[in-house]
Length: 312
Image (cartoon, rainbow, N blue to C red; front, side):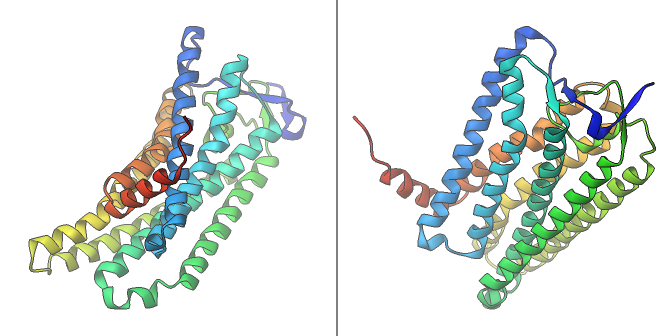
């Protein structure tokens, strides 16, 4: 089969979620609505946290950063998908494809790091409440966030640069709605052994290790909570962690599910449909999960909305 270097490849073809022309208008309206809800919901969280002085704590600071990352994450993939549906085209040039790969990896890595930091924040708040403000100071939060950003960028650059050295076949159809690294490697005619080793190695280090840290934190949290004598105290402690646990379960559950099944589903659109869960649905649900279960956040959102002038 004839092959060409990546720099000589004119474009890839994103097959999307369905090839049925009658479904395209429905998909456009559905995903445009989901994208707008995601952006608006996360933007309200950011504005509420910044406008209410009672929410200027490490927990809500990390929540606002998570919301910002969710907006950037969905904006990396959704606009191109919507443009392709509206323009009835499936093409994406190689520069755009590489850019998507890079930014998706950056924002996935950042979300991963922020979820770990939020777990550590809850661990300190419940297990070491008297030392909370000393341990979770602004300097530590900033350093942890910077470290997560550097690791995410280095990971994304490593994979992106490794893709540049590959040779691609003529058939450049991607059974997905965005350029995902695992799907891109399926189109390569040259040896991808090093790339695959890096993917599995980095996934293990940046996926399994942080998840293990989260599990360890919650093991210690449960142990501490069970020592609280009153039922009300136990409920309050668990309610602090409930929203974060739901988001962690959605993010890691759908993410690992997609990658573990990618080998069996890369030739069909089943993998793309599954990817919708962690790329679209989870960022959309995060604002609702954190706001509906949090009285302080609901109060801040009501104050924020009440300041918006009504036009008659």
